[in-house]
Image 1 (tube, one colour):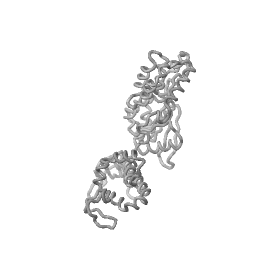
Image 2 (cartoon, one colour):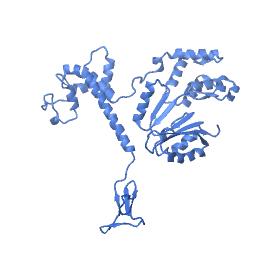
Image 3 (cartoon, one colour):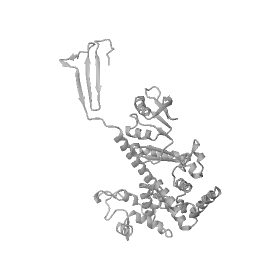
Image 4 (cartoon, one colour):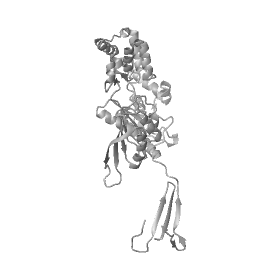
Length: 401
């Protein structure tokens, strides 16, 4: 930094690090200037700066907690009028249940008589409540099992409170395929279609075999490869065409030549098929972004998108499918070296790289070149006008193409 005020010329130099700042003031000959008998140079030490990862995790947790509070507040608003008719102090007691007795207050602001937590009805206090429902899950089950009886509205609230506070995908838990649609009808339609194309599967005509097929397809403990082996043992045997069909049903990628018993199909540009074609998988470490992506996909009617919250370095090693196209949108520092090499090892035809820091892109472009990729198109996007930041989008294509 140079003084331009017209007075004595001097330079101010700064050396800024993650845990210190060094400074020095020199003349135009780069000699340290002295002022009041002291050399104008020094250093300031401070606690080393941390990355934004910790703060990001804190903000995510804080927002999640805030959303949970809003859900509970809405639920209380819906139930408050009816609950107030039979127990005006229910919500207040529930709110103060975490306090010691001396700090609790009733609706009139006085310390209540004990016992005083959730239920204070004559003949029904917390003692009776916990004897009847040892856990919240006992209560939830009882409300479902006793649909013919009108339950206490406070019990309904407590069950919904637990569901909405610890929300999850509980709507279809334990539900089999046959409950959502007639599985046997679907299989029969498949058999009719195969028969029209000259493939007979008499092995699936029996009811017990139909049940085995459903169990294999609905199993969450088996991978696609394991399901393929089980299906082959069920109806394929050593028939190569039926093995290909078993793989296709299991979700694997199979050759069209094996499926239709026609070697000429190997010469086609697209000679493989999978029921998972057209699927989009997104990986993002910020859970809030993943949640927003799922909402946007639902609003736009996209049912072929899967969004995973996690570190791409870990998730990528768990993915079994080979993608057709990969889109990378890393942070400013770029993609983790191990993750980048794993991604390039897929050998996909095209990769789109969205970079917000050109130096990171230039560094990682060397790795792309080493793995046989070449940049075929690039464009710069000025997302932040009047700043030095610029987004660079590059499409890489493998040299074999």
